Image 1 (cartoon, rainbow, N blue to C red):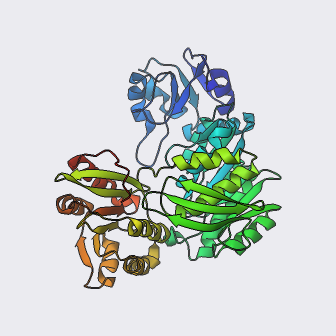
Image 2 (cartoon, one colour; image 1 turned 30 degrees about the horizontal axis):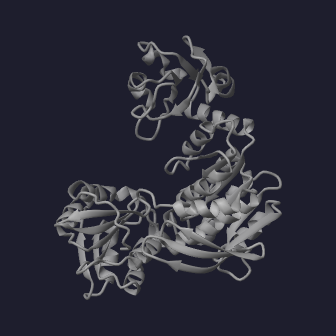
Image 3 (cartoon, rainbow, N blue to C red; image 1 turned 120 degrees about the horizontal axis):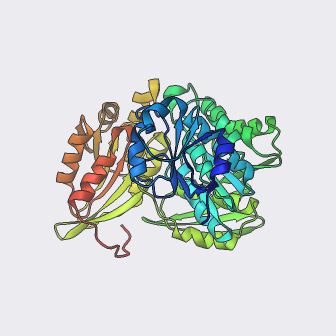
Length: 477
């Protein structure tokens, strides 16, 4: 059996104390007692809302081969007959294990941060690099103080490329994660007004994202968005950090990896990218200029790490939008269909505009409507009313005539839209979910987007529950 970690290495890396008769090793690591599989170790992390120690019994019942628990909680777990590694702090132990995983790895590591597009860029990197070697990347958006070390700790020793997403809500959060990941290549997708409630300006957001430079390996590469207003700031920050290999992507004439042309369709797009003295045509299996722009950054990384460019370009044809980030569903209604675009995972002003553009490019069928189903963008602070009201402009420019809203902050958008727009405003997500499921009609295209805290995933779930999916007929809508 091939182990992810031998038990001896686990103990040494985490400064742990063995308790009971431990197995020779583990095949995986989990922090979720519900999804753990036999052979894995369960790390009983204490989070903001729940304490993993309270679910140790369930983890054992589901096949955990050993538990990693804190010394203080051990007496309460005495009834469990299962091997354990006892540590002072479980999250701290996971972080130590993540550092050990990076130390033992010879993988080329790429880290991605930015206000928008981190997860999609990570997934494109996974696709593009896979033909060139074994890729290890985070599941979902594991980009915070526990997600990054967990992803590191899960990295097999024979990984060829490690791809990590690093996020933040406040200044000072990226630096320790970057020092843990120690990227060979760092990508900053863009700087946009996300988490504005925790910052006073875009420059402050850029400075927080620039913390990724602190962990860059000596001689490493940085890839920056030349089209972004904060490019000069980030370039100077990289230079101040002693980084010599600074590369750029975007439509800017001086971009090293330049997006020369974009042809967007409803469910896919084609881009022409200039780099290294040639122009390459790249077909992407997902729509949106924002995705195309980040695909250029991905190709920059492919080039810098020496992966197979032809294979990477071919692989990107298989890109598809993921749950909560543009996944499309064709659903059956009254013998016909409508289209659901699921953007429910998160939202800020930049990603809202990108999603509205995708909706605008989608073609309803028959008498169908383009409908924007929008909820609050959280963490906007004193700027909240302004940025919500400002969404009226891209909606009007895109010709979206039906806007269905929920959330207290969306009152500002409701008030900013003219009477010519069919606006429906309801206070709660539950009320809006009931309205949407009852009001959708054949041929409609609905785009559902809000910050995660609004729970707009419930609207998506309600639609998927009520209306059956139909096979993709290949039509562009």
